[in-house]
Image (cartoon, rainbow, N blue to C red; front, side, top):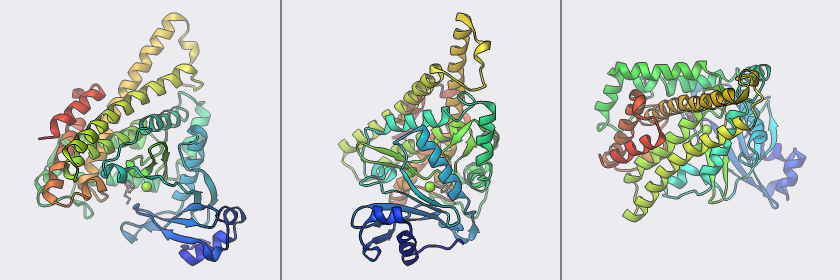
Length: 416
Ligand code: SR1
Ligand code: MG
């Protein structure tokens, strides 16, 4: 029954769903319908009626960015709906409310987030978001912890993995576009030529980097630690000064936690390096860049604190059975193990953040942080700084034992 619902068909469809028609209010003919999707995969409509508005997302049977030559399963709408439902339970108030889902049409209706904007757009304009750190760290700590072996039984965890196992086509996009293509000749790669030609060639020749990115790829493929959002960049986050909502979890699957945390940090760091290329007064620039780096640090530190608080408060999962950690000695050993766990997670996060950066500069899908820097030379300078940090983060893992080491290195490269 799948068909692409353009304006007239969408109007008829929504008119036939009593709850949605009531939410919109007034005559269907008077509803305004605007397609606003600026992502790489789907159609997104904003529909407004006399009483209220809704957001409608429909998956296309192909990659929107490329066209019908690249087919993509509609089932991603099912996984997105499943992930959003789970995230709404685990992190209430931090994802959009779900109003309706039609599996056959690969269509999901959500509350209209207004006056929220895509965080990436706000950051390109130099805006700061005071709620962001608290909200995103709550979102990540709760969704990652409560779907992991630390919090659920082995049986529940395996059911979770199975529920998302069919989303492999979306995982394959990540495996190719993030972990493979930027490091080889691939038709869809692009970069700011000619300035970054030499750097692109270096990536294709650097065997140390090929080993490092392949280790990360293996970790992505073979470490079902928790239910990930799977594409947690600043284009998947909507914000106002006082609210944060995480959207678009169509890449959701059980994978390594550091992939989500690394995505957030990478996109903040790219906004930091891009800032030099955007028109702002020196004062605005300094304030924005200082806020971004402080945000990088507090995202990691607050995430760690919240994750550990959840773990200490009572871990009902089958990993680390309480019976093995009895008494004062057991409690001390378990606490040391928690610290070691977070240190490993930090190393993963640093590696994945690096991978997420390099793909946006040399792969198929770029981001507006850099793309909206019109002068290619200026853009390439910002991008080269980001790549230099990313290479170091991927290859010199030991040089980044703490998040302060990452921000210190970013600061040093800012004027390189
Ligand atoms: C072909 S899809 C390209 C990218 O868009 C999504 O936002 C994901 O990041 C994906 O890798
Ligand atoms: Mg998306």
